[in-house]
Image 1 (cartoon, helix red, strand yellow):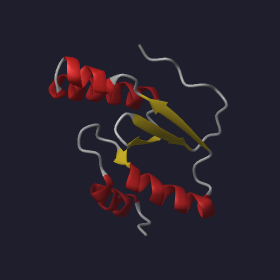
Image 2 (cartoon, one colour; image 1 turned 60 degrees about the vertical axis):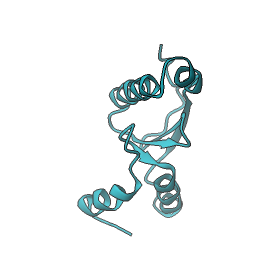
Image 3 (cartoon, one colour; image 1 turned 135 degrees about the horizontal axis):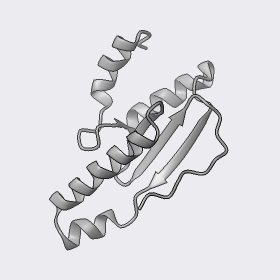
Length: 108
């Protein structure tokens, strides 16, 4: 497994979601497995993007992709220090080094 930040970045190249720009679910599995020993990440939050498939059907896949990219930018700006993953289409996992009991803010 990679140890330096550069090695981690190269390694994650294979685990990147090209549309949202986040890591994908395969890399989430790797990180969670490693975290069992390292305890680097103290909290995980999940976000589900509702009605993305409806947007794709009503408007177009291009519009849905644009919405997804805008949503991804919003998540990144709200959680700049977190490790973020796009998991199975409309779902996102946010791993943080700090323990958090606060609910995620509602994004409109």
